Length: 248
Length: 261
Image 1 (tube, rainbow over the protein chains, first blue to last red):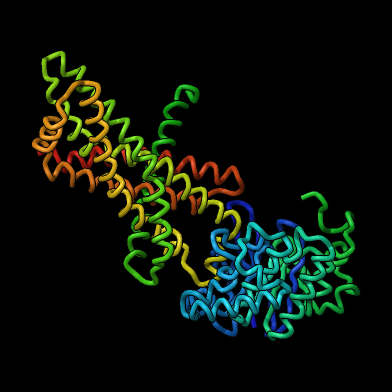
Image 2 (cartoon, one colour; image 1 turned 120 degrees about the horizontal axis):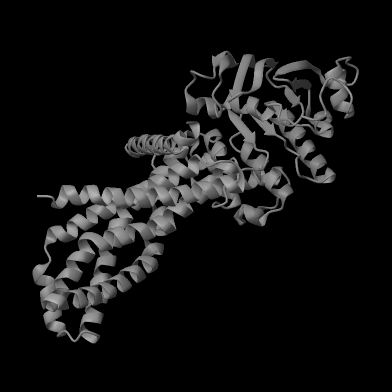
């Protein structure tokens, strides 16, 4: 279970997170929605320690993220970055097996390659892709490789940062389905950030709405359409009128 | 009054900014050294960086040294003619190349070629979240990106300087023999007789220091790159400027240390 209590983060005068409280139960898929620039990605980066907190506490299964042994803590996570964040200088299979080629999870090269090819197959890519370089792949294929890398070491917790941004609706649907299948099959705890409502409906068990630096609403996906929360209603229907200013 | 003070305020701000930047680079360098001594190590990344920085810089360093050696021979010959000292050309070319011009010009050429490429590569990795991805994959960016490059540059640049020195002396020999009419055997004898081991070794130490500076500047500005193409462009420019200025300043300090007595 991931617990966020009173998370604060500012960049200069810009107070992005102003006391975020959120609990993500183990094995559940939590999707965080909210407009662009509301701090959704910052929130994920705070959990991973990529951004230092100004205040508040983060625990994962009762373990304080700030004091946990870093390598062991990060080994529990997998992350799909918005732009894929694949390493240009490495072929696809080495990107996927990156964690398996070094550090505490190190395997032999042959074993790591085999696992990489199996994970690539799992996300719908042919083994021939393994020896290509990221620059030779389309945007959709890069996302899949990023997804394969995120699941390669079979993490307990997976983060997805804008998994469908920049993809056509069909490819976005394929990625959404893959994420849902993989999360269910691995029994992993998932946190996804998106403002794509089709992703929310495909991926989420629970939804949280982040606005003005705090969680405005959280609840099961089944209650998202019926909630009377004006922020959620304005957001999911894409209305210009409402409590969220259309021009930020 | 405010108008009159503006230039002083600007100078003060620039000076403080430059000193703060030097402090931050020094801390970054100290951190790189400390990570260099602790595992994990990445030998494959080191070898790749060594080839990129050393082997692929040979043409540019070699060409620079060749033309510099030739021009130096011409300059010493025409300058020496004023007091009938044309015969010193071989020894001055050799000492000038190995003590000063070989390491400094080699260092500056490597700064232009390598500091820029390191800063651009790491800067692009930063803006495309590849450095964040490294962290999430339990890999320390300092160990994986900076240490192999800093170590490779510190070891490769002295080798480049040594090769450049030889090529520079050869450039002086070509001009001395073919253009200025020196006897080939006398030219070589003069070069050998006046050159001391410490002349060569001091230049190689300078090369190691310059290699370290180049890689540290490239990595520091790359890892602290701003957002977007403009941020990477600024980081690249700053890395080359900082490396070049630090090379020249360090060259003076090392010359004081090595030869002031």
